[in-house]
Image 1 (cartoon, rainbow, N blue to C red):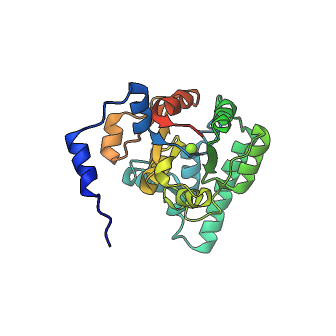
Image 2 (cartoon, rainbow, N blue to C red):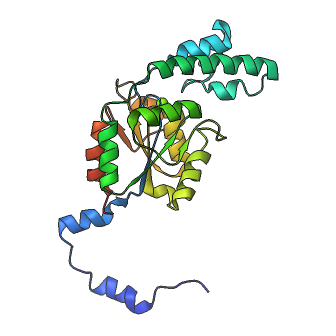
Image 3 (cartoon, helix red, strand yellow):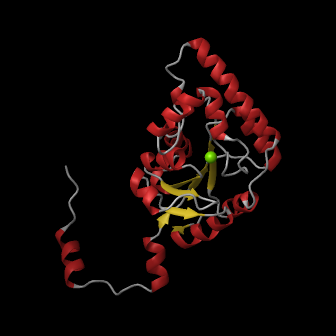
Length: 246
Ligand SMILES: [Mg+2]
């Protein structure tokens, strides 16, 4: 039987609206509850260390790179590009990708503000997870260097990868929270913001260099809920826009 609001409740609401709550109460009542934050790794929790354009050129070849780039204005999904290749060609492509990622690992640096942000989330008992298209080996080294863990931390061994919403939905189900109670933070519109939006989570684009503006969001139909230029800004963004009470 469908749930019906009893008539007396309706009439109370119409005839005698409750007094307007104090502003502080009202704003906390309208803020969304936040139970978890999921981060991208490369370029978000770590300083960008992989030259992705050089990697794509090395995998695809100069001519193919130009063609694929023109076809994908929001960015190239290299893992997707090589999916239909022959096993032998794929193996070689994967070796090139791994080589670039290993070079990136040698230069791995934690993003300024990452440790402080983790401390803040811990103080509010907000969970933190990680989704990367990089390999598990890289995530392990990142955890070692930071000295703090993200859980779950899904690397590209978990398929399908971002921008598919599957990894984010998987984390939500492990945490037993709704996607609408989670914020996805990342530096890639095509991977992180797409993944977050498709899953139904809040999204925050980390745009250190001011690469993206409203026309890009409109063109790609990928408007993030928030945009910051450093991880340090995420702290006040969370306090202003979300209900963080444990
Ligand atoms: Mg990234």
